[in-house]
Image (cartoon, rainbow, N blue to C red):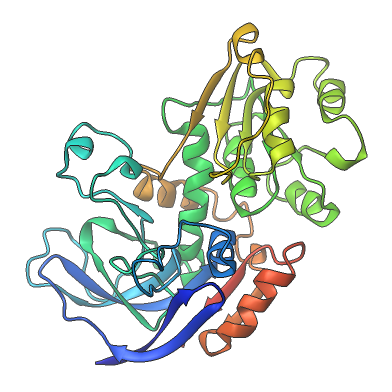
Length: 352
């Protein structure tokens, strides 16, 4: 069977080609793609500004935020996945058998590391069909749309960012989320669900207004003045018990150590790899800060789906998809994602 699949050959070289769909191995499923989100990391790879996309190994199919339906299963499946299931999947894929995986480390530590939508050996969702091993595939509720399924990967980052690696939050906490993009809003919803007081910081007025609909009680504009002063004013000098950096912005990263409360939990999930950011690291000592990052979302796929389903009727996930395009309009969709970053909350590709 042939299918139209996108391949990124290098910076600004994205092509849709008709190719033969690989035959299934016993542990794989064939998925007809229903929707695929365009992430900021996809844009950075396309622009040649990120080394995460490994087109140096060969052309690869982007798209790590996807939802689809199983249309064929391998002969040796051990899971309960079946034809007709609506599904989504993990992005960072540990092998489960190397020394680091057996030690229980994060999938990003896997010695046979793969990352769906970023490498030739793990093609993503920017194509009519995709083949994925069953261990990385998760069933979503039948009443969800495929675009809802595409949000699971994004939401898992915000969810794991707060609760993974020993993290926690409850109603006694003040949570500060830096960045009101898709990941920041996901973290905001997670924090609000716990009952915490949620403060979202973002320089874009439109995103601040959106944040109010997705968990934020207070929104702050860092471009209008000293953000530490602003935070202390609205927290009565306390700061943030949980501070989540979801923007990857240098100034936001540096401010983490200023706006955190004593004994605060600092969670770094915004992409900033490859840059050195000056920070006052000594504050981690005198404030007794707990700092954690997260490379992948180990064992959080199914938990994320259950969490989202519990709040599904409280938050309008569909409204977060600011732009919809058919897969045949991929070039136009990429142009919007690249040049309208301030207005494009999530550009979603839809398949027939």
